[in-house]
Length: 223
Image (cartoon, rainbow, N blue to C red; front, side, top):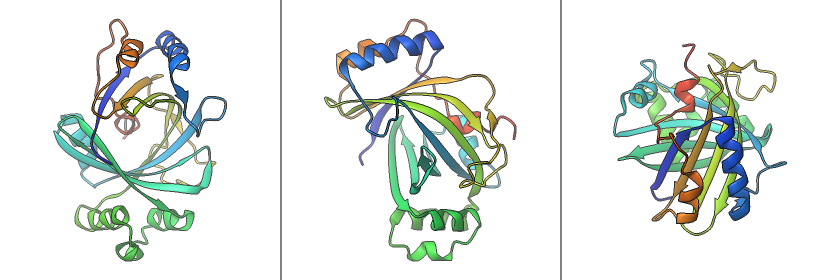
């Protein structure tokens, strides 16, 4: 996947209702949705010195982070993802991993990764060895997603963000999570070469500016 443009806005409940209604008139609901939304659980990795967190907070121009992710409590389909940012553009590399492989990574059993034949898995292994990357915290949230073909646009609304604190028991549905501070609602827009005017008009909200909000950073509020 090539690098894509990204905008994020922190919005309120009234904004969310208005944007949702407008998007439904012109865009399609993401195919993974159930009743218009779906749940996401991610496990983020970081170094002992919190390299990923510090680079995000400091606004480092070139940065990356790794996470494992599944949807709607379905552990039969899990992704390992590497998200890169350069000059404000974003890119995501991913590899499918099994539930057993995800548990091995969480448990620190990693020797198999270097011969997995999947570049993202092998890169995480190298970073775990060279930078000391380890599972750091679980991030849970609900997402509403819309797609618009011209410009390959994807618009998401994320809310009910919860943190697993120091818990990394990623595959345990009963792992305790708590709200990540206040009730954040994040509107995010991603597109390729151009952003169609119809989408640009929909996401223009008075008093809302682009932000560098990070759900991972928000979920590290307690340490």
